[in-house]
Length: 117
Image 1 (cartoon, rainbow, N blue to C red):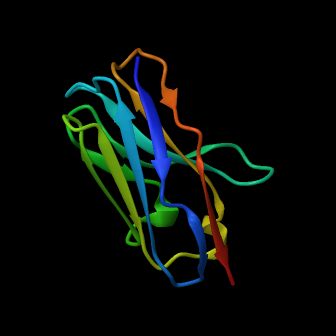
Image 2: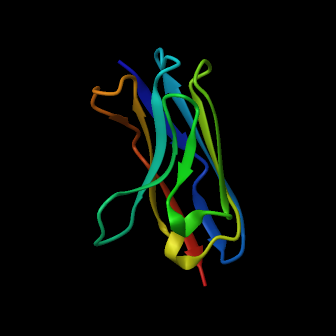
């Protein structure tokens, strides 16, 4: 059983930056899939960035060129660096970990990111 814990959210002006951190308790494993999702009011939760089973990284189109993702599965950490933030990035951001391809994800409690215009 793994449990992600997020930190680093906050209030920032448009154009600013924030760094979100996720620390996972328990053994993640090298084949784990680690990801950041976000959910804004009235919308479905969406994938923002993912560190795949083989280390591949992908982003949702709306954040490409602005966000970077780094992670260390052995250490159980995942970091989302968010630059040039926009008001539409406002959401609760969640860290997700799947220890296997068919394993249901474990979710953190979420961290609020608010970008003012």
